[in-house]
Each structure stands twice: as C-alpha cells, then as structure tokens.
Image 1: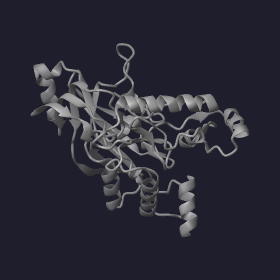
Image 2: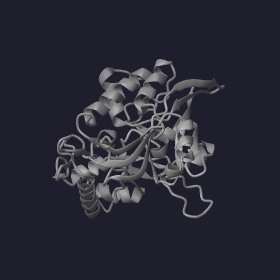
Image 3: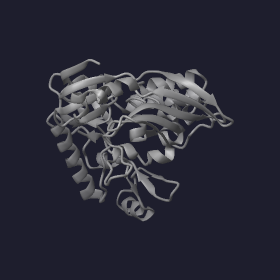
Image 4: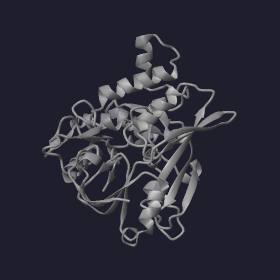
Length: 350
C-alpha cells in the first residue's frame, strides 16, 4: 500500500481547516487495514480514522497515521418477513447511499437525506434528523480491531447508541471495557429497512410542507425531496462555505426546567420526547443570545442558522481550529449564563 507523507488535510475536512497529516493511507478494503497492521513501522504509530471529514475540527496537525476510509460498494443482502437488509461499504457517501436505497424502491432512510459524511462515520455519531436516528434503521456492522487485527460484528445493542453517541466515541476506561474510540475501523454497515413503511412525521418544517402542498400522506420520495430542499435552504454547502453541519447537540431538559425557560422566553422552540424529557432547539438558544453572524477571526456563526459555525475566510484564509473552538466556547458561556443550559459540541475535536 502506498503511504502518503506530509499530506494536506484541508480538502479532507468539510470545515476547510488547514492542517497536515504526517502519514496517510487510503483504506479501500479490509486487506489494506491488515497490510498496515502487518507493517512493523506503521503498526506502532498512533492511528486516526477519517471518513468524510464532515464532523471534525482540526486544531493542529495530525501526528501518526491517518486511515482515510474509502471502502466502496452497496447491495441488498436479504429479505426478511418485516425488513429488507441492505449493506454499504464504510467509504460510501451517506447521501448517495440514501438516494440509492430509494432508487431501489426501498424507503426508510429518507429523513436522513443530505446529511454529510460517509456510511462508516454515520454509526459513530448515530446521525439523526427530522424525527429519525440511524439506530432506528440499524441492523449490524463489521469492523476490525486496530490493535489485534481481528474482525468483529456488532449489533445495535453492542454499539451503545445514544443521542449523537455510540461506543465508538468512548475509550475503554479499564482493561476489558468495551469503549472503541481509536480502536475500531468500521468496514461495512447493514440497515434494516421496513417493508411496511410509514412516513416519520411530526417536525414543523415537514408539517408546513404538507400544508403548503396539500399532501396529507407523503410518500418516501416526497419526504426525501422536502428534506433535501429544507436542508439546502437552512444549511450552507460545505463545498461553498466550510462547516461541520450542526455544531451543537440539541439539549434535553426536564419539563420543569422547560417551563422555567418558557416563563422567561415564551417563544423557545422545544419538543416533548417519549421519555418525558423535553428537547430544546440549540439554534434558537444561540440565536436568542445574539450570536447569528458574529465571528472570531475567520470563524463565524452562519447568518441563516445559528446552530452552524462556518469558515468565514474561505480556502485562501481559512479559519483555524483554535478560532472555531474559541467561538464555540464563547457561545457555550453565553447560553449558560442566560438559560442555565450547557451546550455540547457535536464534532470531534482533534
């Protein structure tokens, strides 16, 4: 396998932050991973797994070896009584895979359309949008242990999915613990798409589209088209303005906390959750604190959606990871001081 040295990562992270990797290997198969682990010099290096680079903030150069996952392929695996099982290689573009499933007449992932990144990174973040999370359609995945070289398969319970969370984001605290951060490279992911499909509705943007177009029961392709249009109207294209999508998780609070905030700010955007908690719209909280359009150096809050931080300097004068994180921390302090809510970043800070 060819190992690239002193590689620019600016085009490999959607924020467009200028950073470099000491070494980079393009992984297109399980055999490529095994070749890395069999090489005495490469095996001992620290390893950083990189997918589409759409959920990271690089605060400096990456030492060690970057494993750029580019494993291709997608297929229908099997039909069960209730589901169609489909599989995609970890390097496949997520949105392209969602589109492919619909082209095959297999609905179920349409609410997750246009989420940036790769298939292999999607379980790490447990991506979600418009009332659906990846875990709702997840079947299992194949991965390889970067310490032992052993392949393994995980089901949903073993992945430890939570809100924008999974076992892949946590390191093992003790010997024998099942944290897999920095240890696993995902090879393939399989999804269980419902044969008795029902649209996942309930979000205000979707309800507005239903009213505007007079559609009481949208089909999967209609949902897909609406969600693509909604996301394009709200979120900047990383190819035009560097960003990592939604920068903060939507916080959850108790009903009592929510009522307290409503008492002070009646217009706060909130969503009751099945477990009795209430999810608050982080973008609304940030906007209410006056951050839309503000900047620190070349890092800025997107002027159309306060939940998104952007690279305001473009490719020629890119924001640094330090500027992005300084802006993020200032926003966190501001929201906490006004609402008593601690916002948690979504991207991985490297």
